[in-house]
Length: 367
Image 1 (tube, helix red, strand yellow):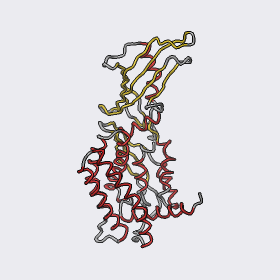
Image 2 (cartoon, helix red, strand yellow):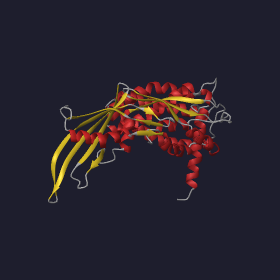
Image 3 (tube, one colour):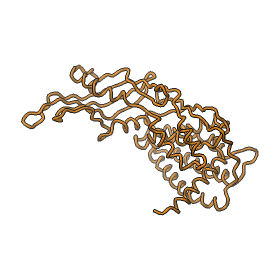
Image 4 (cartoon, one colour):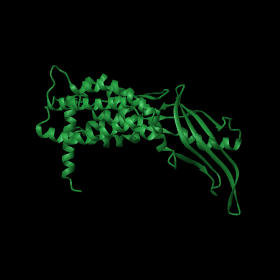
């Protein structure tokens, strides 16, 4: 759930107080790799992403699904699972195999929303089992077992906002001023799915939430003081070193000097933009942070998507989480200026000061 809602967490982290009480509807796109990670954590918790769905008391018979693969097909989610089934009996203290079968279970599942729009359900519209040569399963006993033991478990998969609200609020509480904690709780409590659609490369979701009422937009902030700049530089150097290593690894993963050079150039641009946004007031309403973000993401997004498709699943997840999170911010920037969103030099200064204060507090807290 943490990876699945990382885009939402970063989105809300950037929100500042607003004098508007209008609801916001934001389009999200969740790649199927992110959906798969949640599905695996919910059901496929055995070794090598497996799920023991049924076994008999002597433990001579079982039904196991494994290695789920998720994609889109004709407006539905297609889920492929390896199937390993066995029927046996115990004779003289030994299990004797009577029937053994392995193949693929393919289900089409239609994403639907609960009545209160807080849960995304995945009811099955079609289920087909076939062997490794593509021949349909024709063993009645096994067909009945799949229908009674496997299909209900797959149909019960869901993405539940209610179960994730507390995690989202905890994650954000470190980045929100204490006097805004009630606003944060109200925003998280108001989260709802407004619409859902399965596409070829992911699920398109419209997420709604309410902005706080009775508050005022944050005033313009002053540039960081010399002391604050020194503290920020210490934190940024640590992050900069981590990002530089990540970029070098990305170039090796992709075997592309061009990719590494592009990412390195963007990192240098971020250094300049952050320095300008944090240390001086903008002139002629030019905001270096907003300009850097909006211009850079159009350039960076397709590069990272291409890279993610070429990487092993675990590495690709890191990129897809970042892409999804930043896509949200990018889309929000286009619709969000009336709501006082902090994709700006002022927003960055506020966030940096919160991070500095948290670091100071942690250093003073006894172990």
